[in-house]
Image (tube, rainbow, N blue to C red; front, top):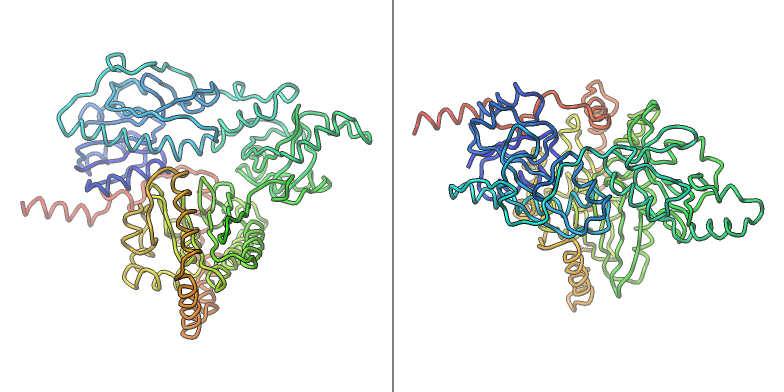
Amino acid sequence: MRILLLVTAFNALSQRIFVELGEHGHEVSVEMDVNDERTIEAVGLFGPDLVIAPFLKRAIPKEVYENRRCMIVHPGIVGDRGPSALDWAMMDGATEWGVTVLDGAAEMDAGPVWASATFAMRKATKSSLYRNEVTEAAVMAVFEAIARFEQGERPIAPEERSVAPLGRWRDAVKQADRRIDWAADTTETVLKKIAAADGAPGVRDKLFGETVFLFDAREAREFGEDVRGRRARGEGGKLSLAEPGAVVARSGPAIALVTVDGALWIGHVRRPNSPHPFKLPATMAFAKEVAGLPEVAPNSPGGYHDIIYEEDGAVGYLHFPFYNGAMGKDACRRLLDAYTKATERQTRAIVLCGGPQFWSNGLDLNRIEAADSAADESWVNINAIDDVAEAIIRTTSHITVAALAANAGAGGVFLARGADQVWMRSSVVLNPHYKDMGNLYGSEFWTYLLPRCCGADNARRIAAARLPMGASEALNLNLVDRVCAGSSERFMAQVRASAAALAGSAEFPRLLAEKQAQRAADEAAKPLSAYREEELSRMRRNFYGFDPSYHVARHNFVHKVPKSRTPVTIARHRDVYWRAGREGRRKAS
């Protein structure tokens, strides 16, 4: 069928449905919901059999839903209505939740039901649940709804479905509902409140007398035990440590806040009234205020953890769950240090695990936007991530594996491809391109890695594309080497079994020798330094040249400036060549 996706933003859920529909043979186009007029125009241009709204904050125009079959994906159980479905479910402690596909109607979330799917809730952030359980349930429900539509069935009113219990209308969660009572809320309670708002909108609070929004909360553990012990004893006049809500230490990007029973780390904040009103690492947002605080080494037993190394037999596993997958210069330098130490261990294989939300998304655009010189910060950041990529490529002591349990984008995709093997979970979506960020050229040795791994033709195809890519396409293009189905937990279990088998194989010495020989031959043919110099010369033009496209695109992305139009790369109905081809096909038929 011809299916139009109508979205407020082309987010992770929308991209996954876009990929899945394409892999099932549907002709798919996307329209950003800017206003009624543009949406009505898009429907007229594309002539869809079906309109699906995976992520939509406004009601579909009456002219559309009365003349086209429309399906709305709502992240709530049958009967649930309102804009904060998942937030309320988390705050209420629901043990089971779901996704419902509704027919388009005048009232939000009020149409009859095409399909639904449920899932068990787990202890996680809202963004984690949304990108995993909600997305998986949405894909199941959308395809069930499409099948029913193709079979000529009709949607059913919620009260007529044998599904219990039914949800109800809930107004949007207000900041008053999320308010932290530092004098009474335990660490667990505070973590739960921030988890239910993580991603957006965050929890409003005050730091250093200023209104802020809190994100990326993690328990302080050993450090929290130390704070609690000192509070209980009142040692050394440290009673200020006992005041819940007080900021008492820093660790990497994070600051420690005291709770009634310990402490927690806040990794990121947003200062809405500052010159940089977007998310930033907490120690960067309040650099002057926290400069004199005690510093706990990041990833130490009591510190903020965003790099974790573990060993299992002959395999080392390096996890780097950087917030939103962003890798700023400091994160890259710490990751390079951790990776270098991993290569010095008496292991045979190193598995690069990334994080559970994102494997990596490359440059930290928020940090760059907040820098005194965005061009200088961009230059330092790309060189720092290139250092990591080069270290991975030059490793000849181990076989390296990139294990992608979560999405990756831009430079993060090519950082992963720097490993000897790339294993990918089947539900992961890749965005292996830079062009949407103001025609950014990109680095991370992609000009070396893509032709070597994918072939020249596929390399050109990947570099020119601006579309999300699913596992099947990535495998066909040799961008990844293996695809595994199942949940994140099942995927990582498969990764551990396969990595152990690889490291313990009788073929391992031969594989390592072949890798060493190939690296030496590649270096003799053209050294990595030449690829890096060529890529960075193009990047320098992006950062310092006369064309401001990168800086404009980054600013709009970071400040979440709404798009005034849908990019033609995803809106094929707005591509004059596609429309001309459709007209030619119509006349021929």
